[in-house]
Length: 561
Image (cartoon, rainbow, N blue to C red; front, side, top):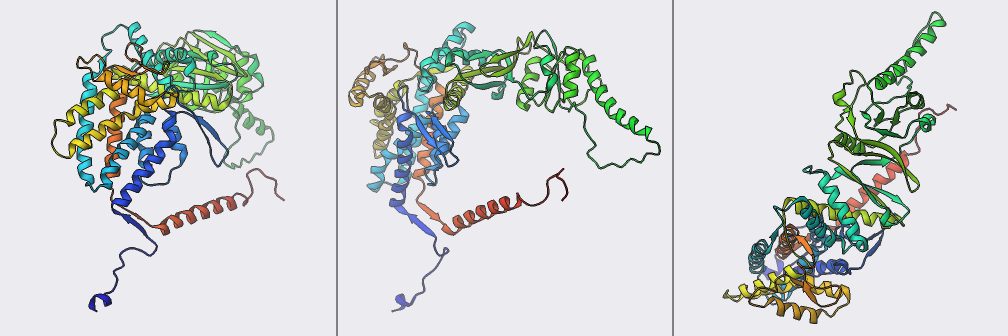
């Protein structure tokens, strides 16, 4: 009776959703597997593309795992972990974003039957961490260094790595063409770690083969005034002045009041304004600069003034482009035209304005500092050029990583099969349940070669059996063998130059193992629907305020009624 009268303890707000225990964990694993199924078919050279259409009407066609994961707008809290590891892989090494998502989901999928059978998640986590550590040790052991080679040899090896990355992208058909372009661009920026020193400019029209690399800076012609066409469009060894000031007549910002006793004094005030701008322009010309670039506007008076003195000028140049011109030409951006000395002026071998498709480009080539490069991309549809840019970003990241961490491993699923074999052997030396868990980790690694076969339309079971047999040879000669995408059999990935930097695989296995362990360690989810609805209401009211505010008040310069 006393038990019946005992009051119920209310700990959480009404409407709070809590789920815990085994069912909760299995639900999280299923969510992660569902996310991986979305990007599964994009893996490898024969991977398919995804077309994503958002609420704003923007259409994105992509093969890049990180891009797809970002655009999916996933709301499930556990599945968001996979989005985060794809982003981290993209920012850290650039490539392997689909791989990392697939591996994490497969580790969880292999753990699911054990969890359902009542195995404690901490036992799984301990074994997975051990297996991940052993896998990375094995990768370091199998990796081949490309250090100590001549520049030409190194270029060739880096181009092979870039070509492997590009083979799975939309521009895979022209991978040799773009691979050498990417390698030259990365070598041009030297030890500079800033990725924005490699500019990618997109010009619709033409074919992919019309794309070209500028060993310097190129940017689209900026807005110009009437006198622009009278300016010279080509200089050899010009001096370049970079400014961050406006060169145009400006009315006073403050409502200054000037009282004149004599009408003739008015002209002296007007003349003073003109003298200020002429003084600035005169100092620019006297500095000896033949090319004047400014981040702010260069007005019609200045444009005509420079044209009469055979000086090229461009105003409203993007900040990023101006910084790249400064890095390439050795100039410094000035905030004043007083005391301009030769040391702050940049120089290059050739400056010219060139027509590319429908656009005109200002191109600085043969720059002394040589710390920047620009790739001008051509192609048919806008979506195609956007995807080509994402593909080149991946390849650039890979080449940078390969330059810094100069070890490579065999691609095409070869390294995954070799680690899988190694872990299976290792598992047999362990007594207890962890033998089964490490074995399941080893089996999960086979998802990469299996998916490569599935995406290419081959019989995955047949190819995997051949690979297992080859990798099981006691001599170890089968270690570099992976899936041959062209024939549907197996081939030596190393001799076929299917290489990837070891850091890509190490990062992928690290991130995937950590993500799997994180999901396995969650045993309860508490969800407060009221806080979600409050957020939604706040966002809606903010939008309402923003819209309402747009129609109040009179704009500056409008006529009084």
